[in-house]
Length: 266
Length: 64
Image (cartoon, rainbow over all chains, first blue to last red; front, top):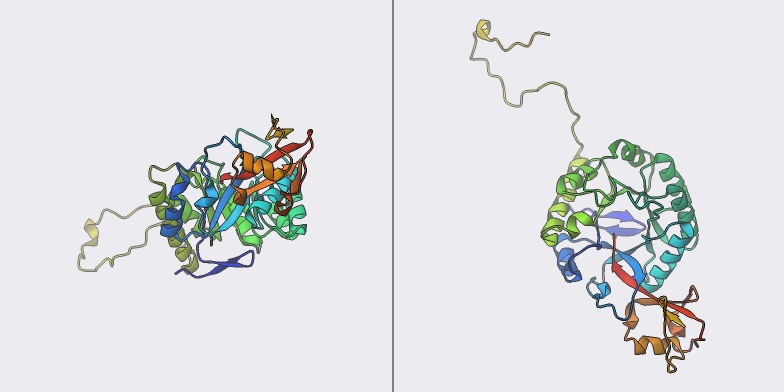
């Protein structure tokens, strides 16, 4: 367990990335980190008003955590590039999650603008993690553009519906070489386990943890599911069967076959 | 001049550092844009502001 894996040239042990939006207080961040071993946290970039009484999130993020700056709020590639540059100026981190939404109802990512922003930011030396609507061709283009990973959505942000895009994500996992991190829609531990059983390299979870009654405990539960799903994937998940196969021996001492009315006639 | 979209007037504000001190910003975790351009931290002390400048002070908040 805890086998290291590589993303963007960095060796990581935890395959769970956590988003910090909507947390009831930043004060629980150190506890979440300590109890899950999470190594990557996402943050967003906003205007800070002098009158703002908001706690400074950076005071609660442990030093060895990798900060992934999210460009949420960007409506096109240019805005995403701008936010990435500003974010990197603040954090010193080159890890950028590109999130470009031109739609407010579903917060659906704009894949076309995301490809543009990825190309630009890769040229500038950023480690780019694009959040996309799962589409194999987009993923291939992002890989070619030099993205560090791709982050297809399991379902829309904050919907807690799980991996509803399975048939679109599977080919991405199979066909590209860079890591696939399933992001958005993961609402409970079983969704997390499913993502990992499918062969995702990691997942990013925010809402399910942040608005849980007990975010620290939910983070632990989801972390356990990530680990369980990954172990099962590495061993190999068994194929489904149409008919039963006995797991206990059907012993031969009940000999009277004439009275056995259970035979299924086709 | 404007700070985060709001008009501010204060004769004591001459440089970016004056704004940071006056408004009690945490210097560690912010970035500053003047007229849409990032001004690097080491220039804050010497960066002279003029009356039509638009200043944005940006930091991190929780986000997914």
